[in-house]
Amino acid sequence: GPGTDTLLQTDGLTKRFGGFTAIDGVDFAVEEGQLRCLIGPNGAGKSTLLKLITGRHEASEGAIYYDGAEITDLRPNERVDQGIGMKFQVPSVFDDLTAFENMRLPIQRVVDGDLEPAVRDALERVDLGGQAETLAGELSHGEQGRLEIGMAAALEPDLLLLDEPVAGLSVEERDEVAELVTDLNADGIAFIVIEHDVDFVADIADDVTVLHRGAVFREGDIEAIRDDDEVRRIYLGG
Ligand code: ADP
Ligand code: MG
Image 1 (tube, helix red, strand yellow):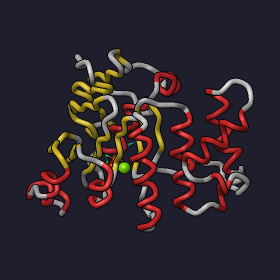
Image 2 (tube, rainbow, N blue to C red; image 1 turned 120 degrees about the vertical axis):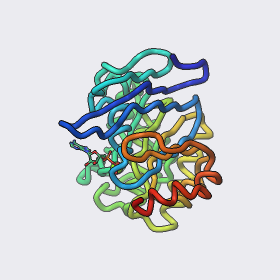
Image 3 (spheres, protein in one colour; image 1 turned 60 degrees about the vertical axis):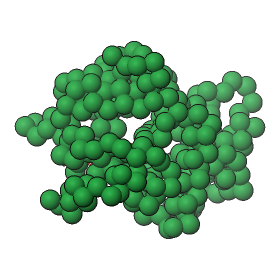
Image 4 (cartoon, rainbow, N blue to C red; image 1 turned 45 degrees about the vertical axis):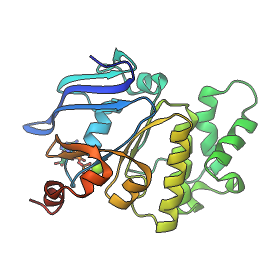
């Protein structure tokens, strides 16, 4: 079972798609307030693992514990209510709504009464205060990413899952996302961040889990992982 400071733990978590095992007996844990990066080659099972944690995929075997209780069979919305937030790999902002209108969607789930100040604050938190009236479809890729992270953070999660939040972003935009994630983590939100870019990982995280062929291949701090010849080998397709 989970330890006292353990926020999330998976126990022998397994996901099969037909005869193919995408996640194979994974034991994986995140402590309260921890920022853990999940890396590994394409097809390693990173996105599938996050979808099992959010409940978008049903586990084939094994269990997931969150905040001391088993959540393996909870619906995605019930997990959101328990404090698990997610920004998916595919953009999920509404392009034809303004940044303000997008942000109002999660805010109205958690705030009673006057929404406007809460929406403004939430936009400020992701440095989009000046873009409130801009259609989300007209925001830059980096601004859209910050809006999405802000919308997930507005639901006041204890754990936020980000699937490749800086894919396709410029170096400048990437740095802004790194700063935002670091700030939210300093506010006490734990993270699991899937990322390919090892430099980005080094900017935000100490703790890294390497997934390979659906299993945990290595865990350690970023320096050790970066210097690990076996990790390099799997990234080169070995
Ligand atoms: P990653 O995010 O690490 O690149 P994924 O979790 O997306 O990897 O995929 C892991 C493996 O599972 C891949 O071989 C992928 O083709 C397979 N897979 C993922 N989702 C499905 C699905 N819905 N149906 C069948 N196979 C899937
Ligand atoms: Mg993926």
